[in-house]
Image: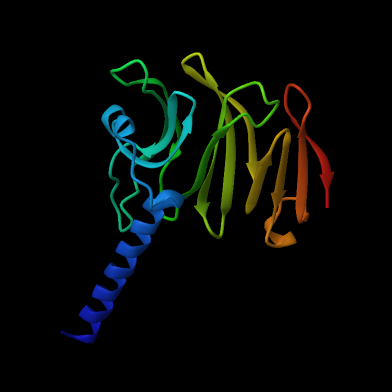
Amino acid sequence: MTKLSKRLAAKALSAAVLASLALSGAVAAETVPQPVLDSIHGRPVGWARSQRDWFVVYLDHKGSGWCGLQGASWRMALVEISPVPERVLADRGISRADCGNWLAWVRAGRFSDGRHREAAFMLWATPSIGATTYIYRIGGGRFQRLAEFVGDRVQIGRGTVVVSFESRGRSPRGEIKDIYRFNGTRYKLETRR
């Protein structure tokens, strides 16, 4: 094997490992629930239980390119598991997928006011570009976008969201931390540090 072919083989292996990590998300150790596998048309990357349903973020198909993501799209779905048979209640596109994307986490709960079912997830564009966290209300067979936050770390609590950045250079206005409170209809910036 020549030095060039060894370098190319090492690059291919690195690309395969990165693609595997990009697709694995934060739930790699968990088994995909069978109702999710049976209902969606794609590869589930993250999921969370929301009462009788599963909220799932998935890739609609295998993409191309060195990372296997180019040409694919990120989607989300709400899978009803009761009554049987399971079915998709809502399905919506998020964005196109590209190399460097990965899903950090998926959660379901009652984040804003404690009364409405909601789902949230954090999707990284790339480590250098950053991540976006989305919060959607779920119910009635549809998704309603409630909020979107850009930041390196997002903590969601009851009625509160804390967005923080690794450095001031990574934030849009030079801040390190933003704190948002839900005012009954939307999240409003309360503090910027």
